[in-house]
Structures are given as structure tokens and as C-alpha cells.
Amino acid sequence: MKKFFVFLFFVNFLFAGDRFEFVILKHKNFYKGHASSYRNFLEYLNDTTSIDPPLKVKEIEIGEEIFDYPFLYLGAKGSFPDFSRQSLELLSRHLNSGGFLLIDEIEEYRQGEFLN
Image 1 (cartoon, helix red, strand yellow):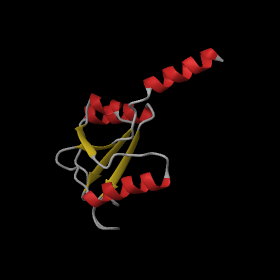
Image 2: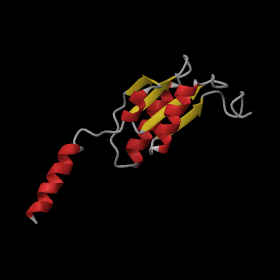
Image 3: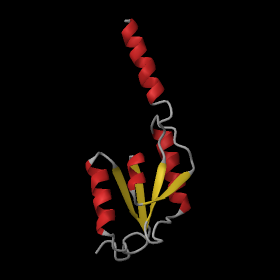
């Protein structure tokens, strides 16, 4: 029984700083969605789950840093610009490692090149 409590203490110590972060991927200036969409998403997450996300978002470039965040958001208006081979490989590796990517076309509903 004593070993079990030591284990729980150790696990709690390891994950004490883990917290959901809404991370926006910057890609060739195509990353700014509607500010209300971030806020609405985070408020919905807070209201309907036990996750208590901060209402502040973080913005990062596509690089090795993406592996520090399991949830990524990529938004663009209309069509997305082409990704470099390196960016595609990093995103692919992130997703194959269990990461999640939310892709949001921020054009008006049912319009733009995103649906094509």
C-alpha cells in the first residue's frame, strides 16, 4: 500500500504542470482566425468538460516545438498556402504520435476555395 501512495505522489509530481493550451500554428501569415472562435471554443471546453483551459492562446511556427503541445489549431481564410516538405513531415509525425490538429477555414460558411 505504501508503494502505491509513493507511485501516486510521483505521478502527481510529474504531471502537476500539465495543462491544456490552445496553440495556433503560424503558417505564412495564414493563422489568425476570428478571436471569438478561440474564446467560444475554450469557454465551451470549460463548460462541458473537466478541463480548465486558460483563455489565452499561444502562437508558434511549425517546427520541433509542436511536439510540446498535443493540440494544435490551423486556421486560414480561403485556400491554405502550400506547406514545405519539412513542415508536412513534422505535422505528419506529430499526428502519428497521437497529436491532434484542428483545421479551421474561417471564410463564411459554405463559401471559398476550402470546400473545393
